[in-house]
Image (cartoon, rainbow, N blue to C red; front, side, top):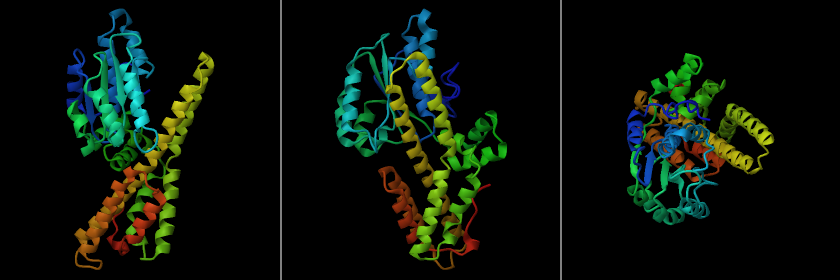
Length: 366
């Protein structure tokens, strides 16, 4: 369960006062579809679940309201359905499943809510399948579309939804949250800076003992290169090993979730479908974690080149070389969303970057 959902489903939404006001104002008379758009970790997924819970409670007899909220907050209500991509994008097959589910009447009440996660990764053919259902669903069905951004091919679908904007969470709010959860203030500050407004990622990083070492190694990449392919390959391997090691807090949390799930399934006699869904989610989380780690590290490298361009514009390599390096890093960051081979991407990028003298490299924030 997301922190804060046990008593008030909105407690886990951080720094999104305007979005929360908009959603709460819509609870009594919701429209057919909402697009919650904002960066990863902005807690829009928590807001989607909170809104779904409130919508069902509003349509539930008062005697059943407490049960409805409890089930919805725990992710166990039969009229709230969450969909996650399988593989690099939401496929046509998944889209057909969504269409079928949207046409089925609610199990318990007058409304059902479908939450579509990472919708910015929907494939064009899947978007075409979903358009009609999202545009004109049955009166009982409400779509909540969560997307990091709206790419051009999804503009038509987005235009059929009420758009709710989410922003990256301010670092000070992230630090405040982490400290309130019992973490060291200094480490909370480092984690917040590394997470770049992503609350979920900050919660993982704050317990990562190697975070500072890893960020400093990324910051030192330009001064560790010597222009040869061998140095680029060796450095890429070192960075990827650290990234794999950084998944330890997430793996530990997932192991606890598996133990809890298996114990509950044994106690209640549940079948294995729930375990498969959990395993699939864990795979997505690990993939997302690697991508986030690599993206964050590349931004640290770009910061080193930026600082070098500001501090030593007249030295070799010149500003043009540094600007080109920053552009290549930016292109690599964008390519991460296309499910590339991470090792090849990093090796190729490092081989293309110009070396810098050690004095030009800026350490990651401590």
